[in-house]
Image (cartoon, rainbow, N blue to C red; front, side):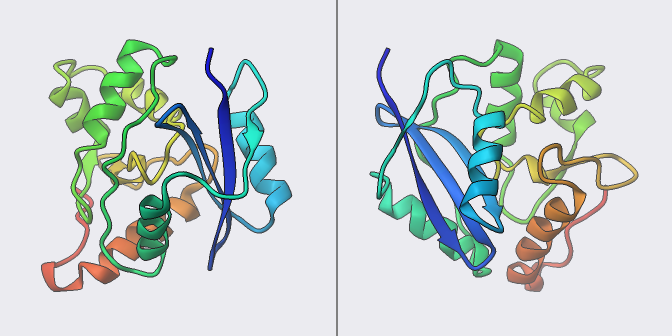
Length: 180
């Protein structure tokens, strides 16, 4: 088994953690108020069967810049190789579909279920999104319930609304993010 690494990334919202294994991204922790809180969430959420090694810098400087741009209100896309191998195949399928949702747009859990050919699996889609090790990079915040925002497991609904608001502000000429 190859080694995994992580580094901190400071944004105006706080400290994030970016983790990688080989040349693929393994986990991302959304900004927290301090490094300790980010590390606690990382240890709970990343589910490594071994201890990742801290590093000063990640080998993904363009990704770090894209994340900074995103939090500063600029449209950003994240097309980097992802390490999802240890997730169940259904979860991988949901996450791969979710990764294709364009910046500033949303889909419902039911729409994602239909896209993967399982139209009655909207609750399972929600559970799979709760296992997303790379929020923001795989934009699970763009998946909402049909009559409300839905949930946002580890980070809470406020963070989901914040991320959608960032996208709405930078997408202001194209209307609003629909609540389908």
